[in-house]
Image (tube, rainbow, N blue to C red; front, side):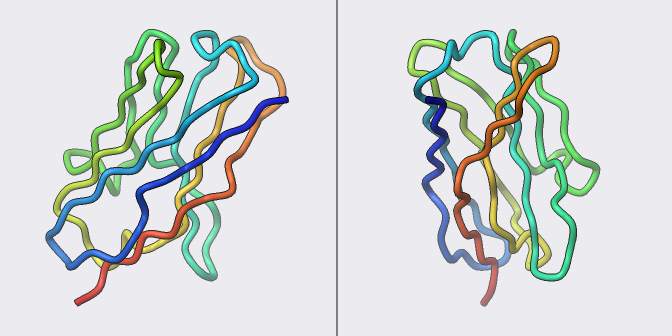
Length: 117
C-alpha cells in the first residue's frame, strides 16, 4: 500500500524560509516521478515542482528561482526548500507520486504552510 507523508509545514514570516519533506513507503520509489502541489483556499490545486526519476526538477512559474526540490532514492524521500516566501505561497502543500510511464497517482494528506507577519 503506497503511503506518502508530508511534514515540515508551519507559520513563517514573509521573506522567510521553510523546508518540507515527504516520506514514501509501500512503493518502488526510484521508478516514481514525484511532485509537490499546493492548493490555496478557493483556488485550484497547482503544480509547484516535479522531480523526475533521475532527480531533474522543473518548477511552476510562481516559485521558479525561490524553491528547490530534490529527492533521495535511498531514503525514499523528497524535499522542498522554500525561500523568500510570500503571503501568496500560503496553501496546503501535497506530495504526489506517479509511476514513470503512467499509472495511478498517489497523494499525501498535505501540510499547511502559512506565510504571514
